Amino acid sequence: MTHSTEQLTGQARAEAVNNIFDRIAHRYDLMNRVMTFGMDRGWRRFVIQQAQLPRGGKLLDIATGTGDIAFEGHAQVPDLLAVGADFVPRMMLVGRERPQGRYIRWTTADALNLPYADQSFDAVTQGFLLRNVIDIPRALSEQFRVVKAGGRVVSLDTTPPSDNVLRPFVVFYMTKIIPLIGQVLTGQRDAYSYLPNSSIGFKSADVLAMMMRDAGFVDVQYRKFNFGTIAIHWGTRPK
Ligand SMILES: C[S@@+](CC[C@H](N)C(=O)[O-])C[C@H]1O[C@@H](n2cnc3c(N)ncnc32)[C@H](O)[C@@H]1O
Image (cartoon, rainbow, N blue to C red):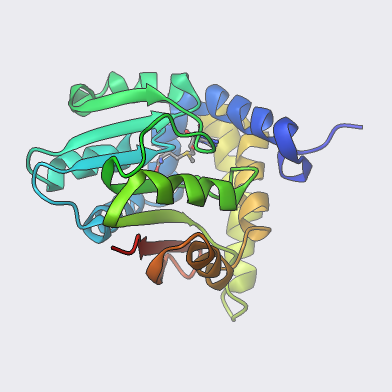
């Protein structure tokens, strides 16, 4: 019997996630723009604003993929050193080819074992990582370890759609339309079935905020976007 990615656990799930992003890397950016109607750019801008990076600071964008959040950091913060890290080299190869690609320091790394010294970054950002990792507390504790005291960690991810009058429409768009667009644009329908299925089954924004507090972050807050289907969380490593 074959299992879909969101039903897998442990290393098997990590490998399946790695395989998905390896297969869709070449169409990842196009797919993002189309399925979010271009709104994803605004979310990434907000992520960098919340990271509160100092001029000349050092950013780790973990699960950088094709680098959109790292690029936004470069655009917003003068003299930023932006490290983009991911466990799928093919995603980063696509980003490296983009015009801003030369401004990013690309590194292959697993979010569960960051190859960086304690307190080496002014801020850590991530887009659509936590839903994909097999151990969220471990990912958060690694980020806590590498961010400087007083620095922020910011997470952008999908969040289960709210239980309101819009929910049936949102769920229809996520479970029927997104896989269809994914099939047409990437030929990888399963990858774009994993996205809605893992989103609907993901932690609520309140639970994720609690997990950030459990990891040691203070002043944890979040804001929702896109009819309540996207949540951006941020928290600070205490001084
Ligand atoms: C949906 S993409 C997001 C890319 C980018 N952050 C963005 O906002 O567009 C998710 C990325 O997370 C990466 N990823 C998933 N699990 C990871 C892990 N354990 N360590 C490092 N990267 C991981 C995938 O390879 C993929 O590039």
